[in-house]
Length: 406
Image (cartoon, rainbow, N blue to C red):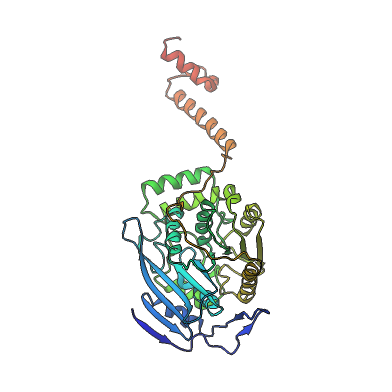
């Protein structure tokens, strides 16, 4: 494995203690250089002072030969307090989680991340895979965690939907807590997910999975940081597209997600950006209230955008998260994850489908079709040859015509 010692990128005289437990918030003076460094690094070890970053490829287990980029970040010598498994959002990879990963690593945690198939530095077809497909990558990463220390799971944006759906299907894992940042759980306010749109998306996804759509994501609305916006717009690891199959699958999850929220039973912490227009905060709050756990907490940071890890509220968010984790240790809620029986881990769609809600639209469409057929029969002079006012009774007239009754 390639090894490289890098110095100077995470040093700052502004680092500060943020609580009585001695946890510190580290100011990364060279954020753009750090992001570019990890973007260009895909295999081997990098040492940043007392922290190492190790990258390797894991093979998917379905026989489709997809290589998935796995990253491990930890202190070189000290035994980690717990593992935090992190999952990125749509159009990204684990690179954008680097500063957050280093924050936790320097405070005594071991970070495990994976680039979902089709994203970041992983293989696979770009924009191809459904949420159910991406759940397999969560299971693959869980096979890499240290079973002798507690496990927390952490996700951003679309990664939250992948993680939550996985946890809803697997309520028996010994996970000490779930942390969600700007979660995508319901349709954005400018997106309608009625039955007709989902039906069309499903048909296209099944028959033309290679068709590419514009997800209508505004990169400048995601972050206030110029260097991160530049990374989004110029880096080849960023994938600002979505395939028809993935779009259809994502629509189905968002439509049925609220109906399944009671199956979320793990302790959960949610962070929202008050000015975030990428996701639907109101929809997330509604789902949050319906989560089937009493141990839940939510923070909203007014005026901040989607990439909360890089917004100026990141210190406050880190303090809130680390304090929440500390309470888990204090209350005995953080216990070692232990061995996981992966034969019992379920990879599947959500447990329940939402009840059909579009009866009015269905009735209206049926009436329109009914009269349209009658009109076509009338103008073709099959029925209603003399009495156009009988248009509404065309089935009766057709019956009389077919059976010879004039």
